Image (cartoon, rainbow, N blue to C red; front, side):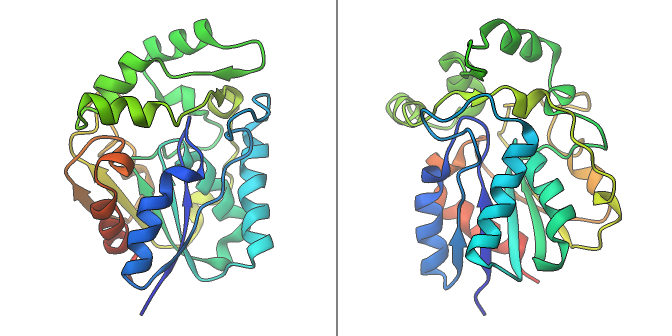
Amino acid sequence: MGYTFVLVHGSWHDNSAWAPVIARLEELGHRAFAPTVAGHEPGGNKGVSHADCVASVVDYIARKDLKDFVLVGHSFGGTVIQPVAEQLAARIRRLVFWNAFVLQDGESLEDNVPPHYKALFAQIAQPDGGVMLPYPIWRDAFINDADGDLAKQAYDTLSPTPRRSHTDKVPLKTFFSLEIPKSYLNCTEDTALPPGADFGWHPRMSSRLGLYRLVQMPGSHEVIFTNPRLLAEKLVEAGRD
């Protein structure tokens, strides 16, 4: 039986990054949809709020009239799928957090990153509200499993992310009482957050979900570029009944 996936990208990305993953999911007999979160398209409005980001995904799902789907969030996308789940719980089959932030009620994404990242982003924020990930951080912390050419090609697809998507506090009054099944997909060489109890992805973020399915795969934070076929297969493993 094929599943329907809704794939929510992370910061600095847009929906185009999912194309190879979607191709593999379709090969495996599934359907997949990938919205571009508000403000994340190249040249988009970088002053949007986190609530605007959430509303754009809710609106996309409503326009497509999608139901009974697996909702996937990567990185920042985790902070989007949490409030989306609060609004659309009856439509969602399972939530999958792929190396994603799991916020607690009233937190922002920046409440969950190392102080040096927070200070850096404040320093390099642009007048229009956007902030760009510096290439050295991308190269060594985000896409450490790519060769130099692929790292540069992938970086060229990125655009500034709306800073408010990182700094706005996100109310989550009902998320942790929802009965939607949850999974956490962890890439074992992901150092976009420093590994360990203080800031790492797993088990720090995953354990916030309560009961969850753990799926792991080798690779960096950006296997969407370096190993999209295996990523698709692992999303199926994470999303299946």
